[in-house]
Image (tube, rainbow, N blue to C red):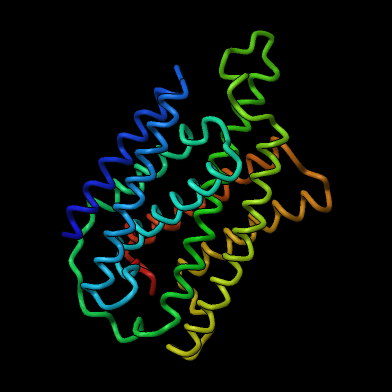
Length: 271
């Protein structure tokens, strides 16, 4: 049953991605509604999949790479829907749904077997630490999409002959401000994730930091977004430079997320 709901969600996310790409080149109110409807239904099915897996496993389903990637996708879609209904950002789906589909497709290709938890994972810190981390990463994923949108819109603003896409994309100021708000949400979530992870590590292994690759990359990511906030508040960096840093920050997250799994090194390899 869990597999069925997952596959249906994957299919609807794929449909939403295709529609969002079509909308990018030849959009209309019909394609926008169809894309959003596909995402909403896919998200509901995805939610049911996670609930069923939780019931079957008896613990928060974020303990293997399939579950982690699936939950990362779920958090990203949740935030996407919030922004769609809150801010109604034109063409946001065209820049976010490809990311969503690639994450979900990656999850679909990974082993889905439910195994008994490792003793170190049998802790209430599991849900707290991982949920904070993935919600923070989802905020950065949305800022990444908005950063790309900013660079595209800036290109059209500077162009002598802007195309119709220029009229359909949000203003540079709106993109910059919403991206900044997302980072101000994601940064404290990431900070709390690092803190709770350190507390959990101390309880499990007697040390706050163990030089684990995921810990190192988490600190690198934290530093990048700290620079984004610092340069904006102190040096007044906005616009293009902030967008580029947001893109670099999210790419760092993706490299850490998938790279550690491929290298199979560190305490976080189960993710």
